[in-house]
Image 1 (cartoon, rainbow, N blue to C red):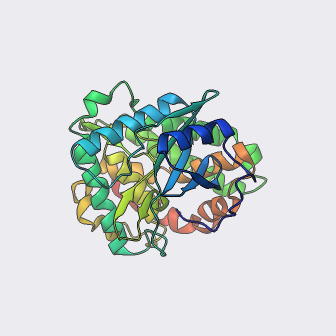
Image 2 (cartoon, helix red, strand yellow; image 1 turned 45 degrees about the vertical axis):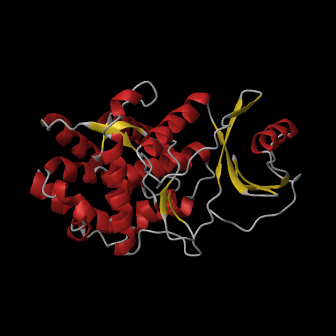
Length: 319
């Protein structure tokens, strides 16, 4: 979470004087500097403490995270960062919230090492187990997520974007990803699957949403995409991000103890064959045209042959 930043309070993306006044009054501390970390996120340094300030798109987006944090802290889950009790701060319909600033470890947390993956998975499982206890109480704040409906939309957008995408990626590979997506969805939709109870899922299981503090404690952060859904959706996202790291060796990934319940489950394996990461990153690239092209290129082109081999292997076993 820490970055080298300018100490100038008046440069760049700076909160309004009205917000600064509210913050200072709520904290009862003198604000000495505001340092922009990235758009909508600031480090607030006072004469007593350091705070993390974040802007939220809507009050509803903030409230769902407030309620989630409140519930987890009530059952003594300390792997999440609490909001300052004065949050939110509303200035001209803009929503802001404060949290304690947690200095991060000098080593960036990644999923490269098996030990890191296991620690992250255990934290994720604990999060799911706790939210399963109160998910019904938060129905008004967390929308249900239908994975297949979302994926159908992603596939449709990808197909519609083909004329643009082929200027940046080989057309043959793009068409192959469409074939993979169509086959996976067809298989998933024509079969019956066991009912899975919902929990609150994190919804964005990437390494940078696991913050390792200098103390060594691991925190789960950034619940913007949290939703009501089976816990399996978070684990699918996790495995999807790990496969390129372990050279597409699924047996190595499924050896993690937390994933044992999904070992051999056809639904889990079929969902892994849907190239959701390709569709997601290409969607971001086309929509913004300033996204991470290199990342999208690596996923789409550099990793193609290994993904193709992976797909064919499991298609033959599951088809």
